[in-house]
Length: 533
Image 1 (cartoon, rainbow, N blue to C red):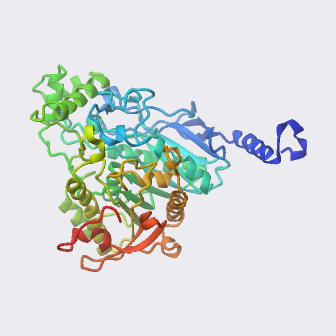
Image 2: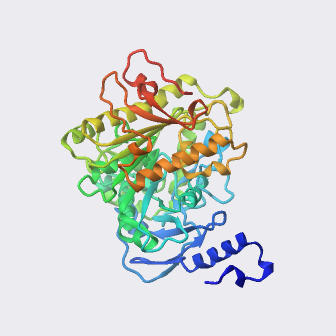
Image 3: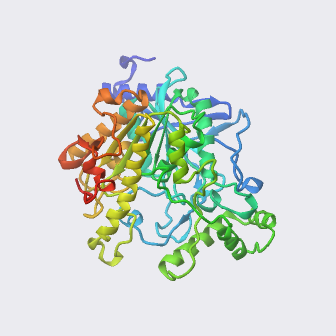
């Protein structure tokens, strides 16, 4: 490699020399060969010490006869694939219902390249051929690096979501650490994942199967990108968080991953679809011309209807139920108990007792005002905000699910670490009533608070860095947190609370608090929940 003295004077300062040398060396490291193809990545524009591969298929396209079937493993291939541009998100709809997500919060929705955030139409940047993932690594990572891997599952309520969400892009975090790899995954949503159709005879929950297929692909191929397949941590937020928790039961005897993180979603307390007769799917089918009493013919006909027609019909019908005709019968397509990928709450409890859960350490997180952007608020009087009683009750449903999960894990002797995100920074929470809302902790972990407009305080920077560093400690060595200052939760279902780490409250980066100060309302009579600690 050239020395600094070899560069002509017009190139610039020694700092520029180093950047040029680094980029030249990194460019030679952008092609990675795996069993399923050779992928050509790029360097991040903001952080050239971060290498990204934005488009990596992990399963065969679920199109045509594969629509509404389990994902299929890719064949071996020597094809060369350009991975510098994100693939589409899985088929989804952009609601016309005004929400805080679309109107008041920055960068939390899938990028649809100019489409209105209230389009009332199929997401332009979505498709059925969508089972892809993206990988971010230090630019100098090689097959000998053996870096720990965090595999992230996005949220979206089982109806939206995907890789290309600005505030879920991890370049800042990888830039800071230079010692780990982040993977993010697209998976099927809404009716294309959870059709609950008569002709499928109970086969559903395809997203949870997609996620497993993605994990299998990563375990098989991540070493080529510099990762250690024995050091994969599965992390999810919201719908991805509950899926991460459910994963521990579905694959308890072969989890592949060695630890998990669930941020604001859990197996226990998850609301599942009870349309076991398939009436919702049949209603959509009949409305789109597939009017057959025979369940197999109904399903086969629907496999020929374009994705866009299906998404627009379902989405616009649901929008109409909210915006125009609240008496219209509701339809939904979400997870359904099948006793394979999804169980009932009582079954999850029994499986804890019987040891039918992967024996892995876990971080469990909630936010202080989970529900503030999830409940209706007066669009014409935004400053008034939503009903505080409704915010508290719906926040408690998540907080208490976290508490109940933690108690069961403690009784099963499973290492559990708890956090509450309680920061309230104006650039990521521009309305007074948002506070530490559901999702806002992701700005801290990914370091994406930097793209939110407004003042960035020193406390915000330090809090983000501390949260990133704790997660890095956990994925590097899941048993190391206690020695780093984050003790295990260790509570039983008594009046003695476990220990939580609280981020961003009281103008402090972090503090250890008694769990009862956060979740006492879940199990102590008369206790009042605090949404703004």
